[in-house]
Length: 428
Image (cartoon, rainbow, N blue to C red; front, side, top):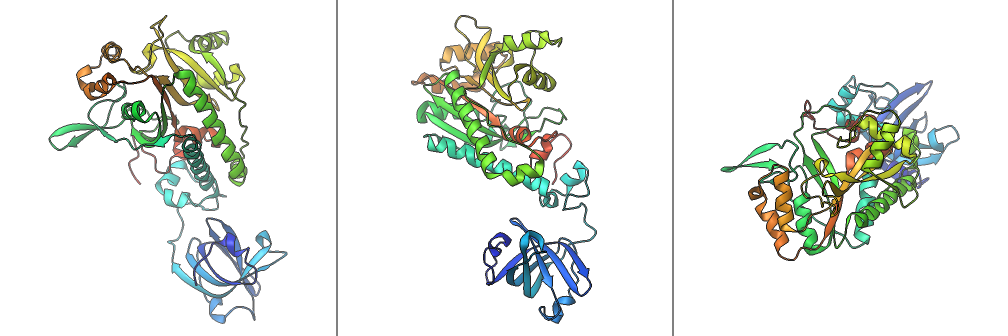
């Protein structure tokens, strides 16, 4: 008989069905035995009573996280968990679990993050971690749905590149036959190449940065959700970004109520349009709160949190940044080249997205590369694509783990990456 989920089994009262999952616990109370079985959809109590269960079933010795299948019928129960119980005709042990367990899958006994990451496959079974990644899944689904329905095409840029995409961040070098190559720090150059022909594109792609940080908000491999749009400036794509964010949050609020309850989180979908302040205004706000900061400094994580309080909005944009703080491809202001058409999106007290209007004039691009200390010869293929009718364009990137962190309220980004890669962790 084909196995069905526990959730579906509870909709098929009185029918003979087969379910399977992990043993959460076993209890013997007098002459009744209870086996609590769990799968991804929920839990159900398997009840063994004299006269109802085969004698051989009483002899089964089950441990926590043993994997079993059971064939029988679901019936209503006033005392069982969720109002249903499962009366088995037969039970098969599919695999035994080593004992003792390295962590408590129920989540009642807290484990250190290091232990949980070492046994991530098992940590994924805990209600808390399962809730985090269910929410992350819904964020991704909503991101793709929103953009696809509005005419954007998903693209697949390469992750092995010949030179730095943005400059600045240290790259991971890898041997590439007789040459040296790098793991991509951004899909930036390729999504621009696509946008100037395909007009509206998006991608979900891993990126790598070899910075030697080891902070609660930093990883060396992350997933980016990127958008690039032709015939657009920074204001155009800021509107797309705020609409995308609102749609993603609404999707999580509607589809993940159980997971949000598990994490003790409440989602507030921001009203649009989001508030916009300039970089200079942000500097003045911080100074007014006696924060020591100079014009030209980047904001620390604590300053982003403070700005959220000072602005009084859960989500807002900081725009018109100094050119020194943004990549070489950011379009300078005509009336003040020290500023570029760039923006950051702050949500939940942390930066979750950044974007710019891009330079689409080859000579200006070469000039900006040189100002950043980069060799235009290393970007020949990139520059050349703007010599054949490249329209104005702009785009942005959302860090998936960073956004998940903000939505779920986690204090360490490693909680929001299934198998994190940082300076110390390369396995599992």
